[in-house]
Image (tube, rainbow, N blue to C red; front, side, top):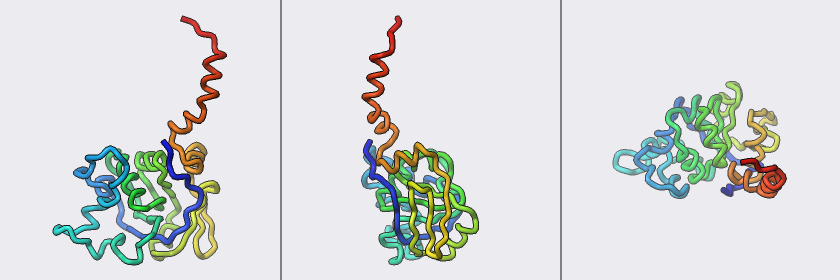
Length: 196
């Protein structure tokens, strides 16, 4: 599958400081009726973003005017915990979020995010606390350098495996990577002796 290539993300941040946001809070199960990636953004954080009557919750960070066009979410610790749900990164991406920053991002969510073009950025507690205390700051994330540049000039690095980084920069998923190797695979099969 072809994804949007991601090299640098420059954006203001929107801060959702709540700990332990699970995948059902990111995209409630009742909205998992589609197989296409499109359309999930309108249901992102639905039970948090909207009140019982369906009107926007004015206290929710993504509903603030300052959150408009922010592509980087700073989340509380243990973001994306809970069940495996590929729709969670789909919803974030469809809404316009390209990166999530936290001190801890659940393993299954992180893997699903990377496979779908959403960048999970894990930082230390000091950097995280600073970002939580300064919502709306402009930061820059470099995927090739695996770095986050803060407005005060600090640059911090975050872990990302080489294959995931390559796929993000190239805008491909794992299947797309294999399809790029089709000629080499065919050559290997051609040159390999077949035995029954």
